[in-house]
Amino acid sequence: MNKYYKQLIENNKNWVADNLKIDPDFFNKLADGQQPPLLWIGCADSRVPANEIIGARPGEVFVHRNIANMVVHTDMNMLSVLDYAVNVLKVKHVIVCGHYGCGGVQAALGNQQIGLIDNWIRHIKDVYRFHNEELSKIENEKEKFDRFVELNVVEQVMDLAKTSIIQNAWTNNQPLHIHGWVYDIKDGLIKDLGVNFENNSQLPIVYQLGI
Image (cartoon, rainbow, N blue to C red; front, side):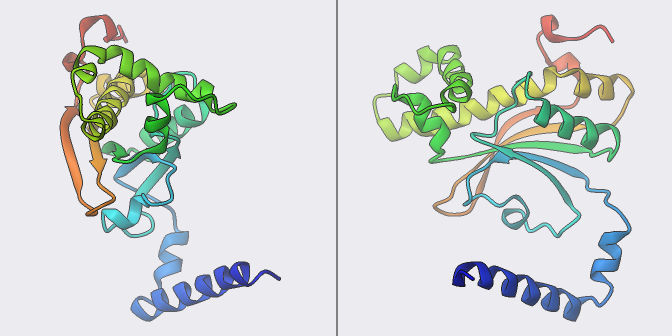
């Protein structure tokens, strides 16, 4: 058996032992069910582990990850996770977290054909089109890349607020806040972009559903 693969099994056993030393009832508590206060919509990048960067324990964060932390209105995977988190788990916060140096956003800046993923990247390119005036004025390529990452998160938070799932929760007076963050891999710190919604009156009226 591959040495790396065997090490993964050993790591799991060590992780179990470490947690049982701290709390002998740790896994029994987890087995009782979950009531996480937070849904995390993040990038699939292996350097951005949701629980670890916010110091959360197992059971505290419900997680959905995809390339470039996208909220695409036809993505049934994302919508199913969102629906379960909001309507069954009753999370109180949904965070869209991007990260600087995101490969998906970088691909959207270029014109290279990659393959099937090109169809996904197109959604990110649409974000550039929405903010073309601002981004085109930024001459420094790194600064443009970083700002594109931020604007992508802003648009995904907006798209999240537009969903009938979120708007139904607000109509039913369910306490639910959505936020946009960017994580910096170079120093491990999170930047709150200040894009936050707690009711649909904060959206342009064309997106406010008559629920």
